Length: 106
Length: 112
Image 1 (cartoon, helix red, strand yellow):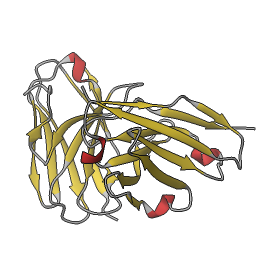
Image 2 (cartoon, helix red, strand yellow):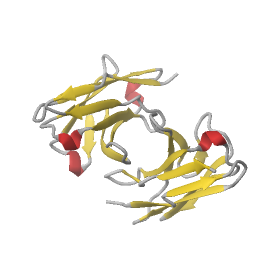
Image 3 (spheres, rainbow over the protein chains, first blue to last red):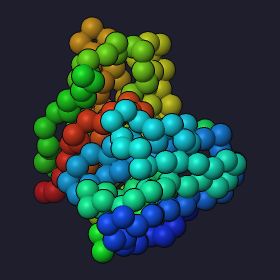
Image 4 (tube, rainbow over the protein chains, first blue to last red):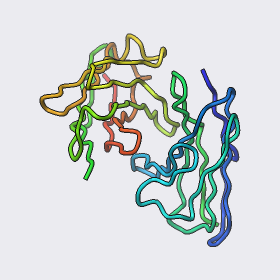
């Protein structure tokens, strides 16, 4: 099983600040998906295939990485971005998620 | 608009089974795999398994083999998941999902 380790576990950012969340895989994966989950809501796809922006997602979000190291970047933090973020790999079974990164507004 | 409409929340007794549904609309049901994900209270996300409706093929997380059974009805564009021999560890929210759209979730509470 490929274990995905996200860091940081919790972080806070001020409006306009840049935020980067990292996802490290225990083995190489071909690409990464990123989801945003707000309290009481279903996860929402942000990034697919490592760096492609999902439909309707603001372009302040971006993804990058390869092999065992991937990241999600929010270029300029906005209040509505306060949420928990998960990475997920679809390369091998079982498909696994990272433990999540809680992003709070400072 | 793609929509995955899940059935309602469930309160079930320990040892019982529960079957939940996920009705897809806004796209061709057989064009996409359907995934099921568990989220325990205050916890992260766990992949349960996937069904490919076009060919009725399933794959499961080993952890959920014997616990979850995935099926799909192409005639009604609906995917199902049955959970058996429920315990308190199964109390959670269960989501169906395409890779890009998720249902609203079903909260299953196992309690006597």
